[in-house]
Length: 285
Image (cartoon, rainbow, N blue to C red):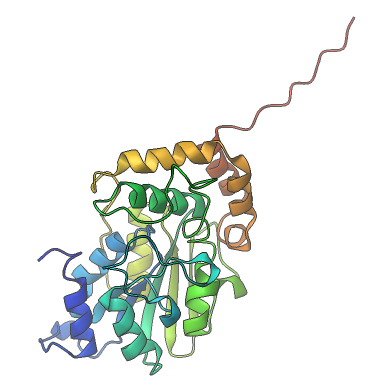
């Protein structure tokens, strides 16, 4: 059973619907929730932590029950409050019912990523998947700068995390140079980790947070692995035509908090090319 396909099984284990023996070393420890919006290295993080902790780990994309809408048999995307994509995976309901609603002790790992990269990755995959969904790139003005892609990362804390947990990263300082921060909110410990850190740095932060040496983050579930690189490249090309979209994303409080000005400038350059240099004319004579 693959790491990705067994996520719902492990969610049922956490909820107590399936009885198995937990790894003795970690039995009795609070569960770990890898709670991330889409396309933020959540699969790689979940896989690494699960290898270390076993069945005490569950992954979810949505914490706010208002955004947990079954979409398997629907055409297109269901867009909820704040332009967020509604989602349905077994882990969402399990985390809400067995951890969030009863305020059960847990440790949350939340990945954050360049919001323009999240927009491009979601839009590109939506347009090239076996069952395409979301706005049509051929008929939607300013695609992919549209719901549910545009604010998938910048709106996540305010429209998904905060309604569920009563906590948002935007209300706290964050060490953008380090690219990681730990927070205590009631009975919940929260690690916020930037996806662009080197895998070795992410591994170190996870090991420190969980108190488990040797956590090893490896790349997983990339667009290339899914055979959808062309869709993501199409989204990238479309973004290059709309520099204002990039500027709006990077002016958002989320971006200003999570990245330094130097990092934001470098990110802008990766999407749009280097800023034109100012040439000072030589005075005559």
